[in-house]
Length: 367
Image (cartoon, rainbow, N blue to C red; front, side, top):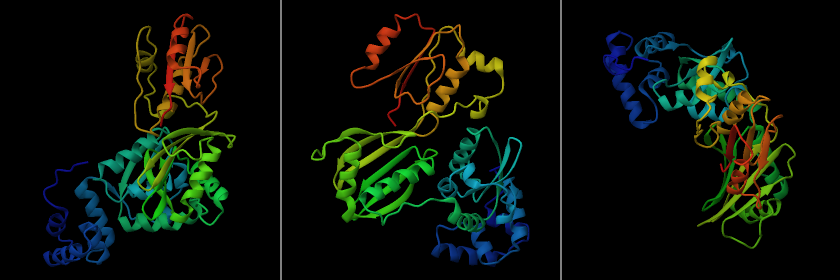
């Protein structure tokens, strides 16, 4: 994108004869009362210019493909590609897919963080993003129209057992990696980490706080009376291992639940966005003497990447041993060791080094 345009967008629009200086002054007056709105959006809201001419000019100024996006242009299920929460936060809508290319419309392509967030999510699905720009109002209207069918909601009116169950199951449906249950001064906030981003999920009445904490401690096998930090596990959901951490703060005890899905499908390296270049892949990972470190924030795909690499390297003539906390995917042909309270990483590694290993994978999932 060419961000070195000749001047501000308003000046460019005047120069092109699409609006007058008086129109720009009206837009600036409106912006003083609505500082969250951008000039281009305000010009559209105030009908100071034909919207088709305006979006075409914006695309030309920013060197972007432009479109007046409507609901009928969305030819896919948005939540199959990015969560609705990520779509709302980044003002982005995937709307068409052809082969391994997916068209995504943004309200602001100059927002590099938003563009990169969506691009990386789609890249991890093996898709190359082709970006477009439209008006923010179009994005908001389309997301609002889809929200009723695309989202699952927490049942805040259920009893304590049902409420906690609803929080956890809704997180699973939204493919969250973590649940944050946070006591604040006047409420209990629930947030989910989805595709690396924390998003608000619910606000729960403060008077339910102690019951929620009690229920979480009960199903996590924690001490009820203890208010210092604790670690526990929830094993009542057959498809998930759930690790639980509690920490006292000034308004109560905060809980973070890490959702670890059992027996995930292993994805090929190309599906994760690695280049389909066998020579390059082999030179990167298939070395006789090397250490590969995979590091990234929570929910960014460290585990997925490690399992894909180890599956690529897995052959009968190679002795591969993993030391994991916990083992999330069982892979035929590997020697997989799961750490527990009695078996530590250091003890396991000492023994494994005596067993003629070719490759050792060390993986500790601490969120």
